[in-house]
Each structure stands twice: as C-alpha cells, then as structure tokens.
Image (cartoon, rainbow, N blue to C red; front, side, top):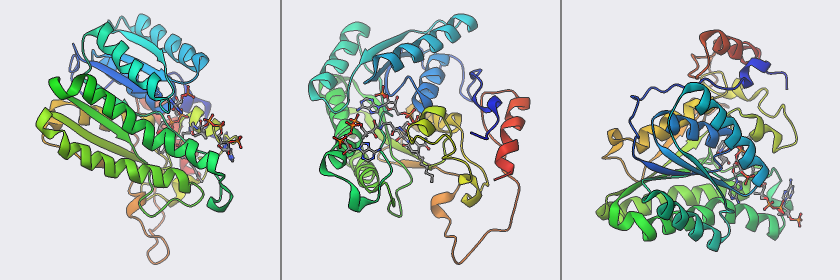
Length: 308
Ligand SMILES: CCCCCCC/C=C/C(=O)SCCNC(=O)CCNC(=O)[C@H](O)C(C)(C)COP(=O)(O)OP(=O)(O)OC[C@H]1O[C@@H](n2cnc3c(N)ncnc32)[C@H](O)[C@@H]1OP(=O)(O)O
Ligand SMILES: NC(=O)C1=CN([C@@H]2O[C@H](COP(=O)(O)OP(=O)(O)OC[C@H]3O[C@@H](n4cnc5c(N)ncnc54)[C@H](OP(=O)(O)O)[C@@H]3O)[C@@H](O)[C@H]2O)C=CC1
C-alpha cells in the first residue's frame, strides 16, 4: 500500500472520554481482535471496561489478544480481556458466548456487534451460498446476538447495544448482499430500540463510510490499495480512522447517550450526503484527523491522503 507505514504503527491509546468511565462494566465486542473491533476493545479497556472479544478464527483472536495484553502490560492499565471463539452465524455458539460471559463476569452491560464483512461482486454473479453467508454474518448474526443478550441478561438488568451498519443509504453496488443486510441491521436497530426501551436497553448503530482504513479490512479484498483514492470523493477529502468509529461507539455506550435509541450515526466525512454529478465541491485540503497517534504521526498519515 502506498499509505505511509507510520499510519499502521501500533496505536497509543487515549480517549476523549474520562478515565474510569466504564469501570465495572462488561462488554462483548465481536470481531474484537482486528481493525475497528480491536480499536473499540482497546478504548473500552482504556476506560476500565472488562471486554470479551469473539470471532471465528483462533489465530486472529490469539494474535489480537497478545497485542492488546502487551499494550495493557506496558501501560499499566488494569483491565480484563477475555477471548471466546464464536461464529456469529452459529446459534449455539452465540448462546454459549453470552452464557459464558454472564457466568464468568456476572453480567453483560454492553454488546458491540462489530464482526462482519462481505466480498465484492456484481450482484448478478453472487451465488446463493455467498448471499446467505453475507446475510447470515451481518444481519442474522446481529439478530442472534441481540436476542441472546436480551433474553439471557439485558431484559432483566438493562444494557446497551451498538450494531454495525455501512454506507448503504443509496444502495451498495458490488456489495448488494451486504448493503441489503446492513439496511436490515439499521431497521432492526429501530425496532429493538422501541421494543426494549421498557427494559432500559438502548439499541443504536454506527454506519462507517467505506473509508475506515485498517490493514485487515484492506487485506480482505486481496488488494492492500483498496482505500487509495477513496478520500477524493469525500467532502472531508480524506479517509477515516478506526479511532473516529471507536469514539462514536463509546459515546453511544456512555450515559451521555441515555436518551438516544434506535439511531444510526453516520461516520463517513459527509460522503453519504454528497451528490457528485450536479454539485462538485471545489478542491480543498483534508480536514483534521482524530487518532491516538502523536501529532507527528497524524501529520504523516495526512501526507498520502493529501495526494489522493
Ligand atoms: C472502492 C472502495 C471499496 C472499499 C470497500 C471497503 C469497505 C470496507 C468494508 C468492510 O466491511 S471491511 C471488513 C472486511 N472484512 C471482511 O469482510 C471479513 C469477513 N468476510 C468474510 O469472512 C467473507 O467475505 C464471508 C463471505 C462474509 C464469509 O466467509 P465464509 O468463510 O463463511 O464463507 P466462504 O466459505 O469463504 O464462502 C461462502 C461462499 O461465499 C461466496 N464467496 C466468498 N468469498 C467470495 C469472493 N471473494 N468472491 C465471490 N464469492 C465469494 C462463495 O459462494 C462461497 O462459497 P463457495 O462457492 O466457495 O463454496
Ligand atoms: N473498514 C471499513 O471501511 C468499514 C467496515 N465496516 C464494518 O465494520 C466491521 C469491522 O470491519 P473492519 O475492522 O474494517 O474489518 P476486519 O476485517 O478487520 O473486521 C472484520 C471482523 O469480523 C470478524 N468476523 C467476520 N465474520 C465473522 C463471523 N461469522 N463471526 C464472528 N466474527 C466474524 C472477523 O474475525 P474472524 O475472521 O476471526 O471471524 C474480523 O475480526 C465489519 O462489520 C465491517 O463490515 C463497515 C463499513 C466500512
């Protein structure tokens, strides 16, 4: 990838939220060992939360957990990280993830349904097995986790859920399966926000643009340059950072969002509101970046983006 290496340096974690905000809280983050999920996990740990990360691949979980635990040890943070292997498409594994968490930690305050993904394909070429794989991962998996978290714990004790959507507001050419599934996630989020309000359970979502740079996200497409050039068509003239998603998730989990439910926050630099053919913005510099890296690194990260 042409983007500078410094962009991918191990992150020094910080947060715009107060230290200890999530002390005595217990969270599950699916897909918490890579990319955006790993960032969410680190910020939650930084804020004192106990975090269970869950996904399919044992090696990815082990690598992610090792990196996170090394960071915890180096910074002297005293937070608990636990790993559970779980395919969100498997109902039994989802039930077990929730029950194990509640048994081990005594409760479940937060569920972050981050795990998911898709492959690029013209919709006409998608086989049924591939369609089902993507819809089951993103929509059915989110449903199963929400249902089990609610029935096994949150119905009686309250809780907060954040789901993962994407920039599918105008359809999603070449990701028709995922666009349809994520639109379903946005709709499910509204429904559950209303149905479960009486149990003091808030359900919201975030919708990142197709522009949140992480090495695993890029590698999934077999093309590490997939994010190159993406910033050009975004009003803020740049791609987004993992941290810019994490802070929105932490806000939705926080007491500051106590009156917000059923909502989906777009994190896309204005891309989904920008209609290019009739109204093209004048050239401009990239906007300021929020990241956990030093100003020097953040400036380095801006470099390649400004060439887009
Ligand atoms: C222009 C800029 C665009 C930028 C886009 C970037 C925006 C980023 C958005 C993101 O979401 S980043 C996150 C990326 N991470 C992932 O997507 C990871 C998770 N994804 C997956 O694991 C897979 O894509 C999956 C299909 C959802 C699940 O895989 P699973 O292992 O369960 O299934 P498989 O056995 O591999 O495949 C099942 C079935 O699916 C079809 N298929 C899978 N991959 C492809 C492919 N690359 N091309 C075409 N079809 C595919 C296929 O039918 C598979 O069955 P078989 O035919 O192999 O039997
Ligand atoms: N990066 C971006 O620009 C955007 C990302 N998103 C979404 O954000 C989320 C995080 O993506 P990102 O961090 O960028 O990319 P990653 O590829 O790093 O994250 C995907 C994560 O999901 C996990 N996962 C995938 N399928 C399953 C499954 N069936 N069960 C459990 N876990 C699963 C993977 O772990 P494992 O392989 O071990 O199962 C991995 O940790 C995804 O839902 C993605 O689609 C949405 C919009 C834009």
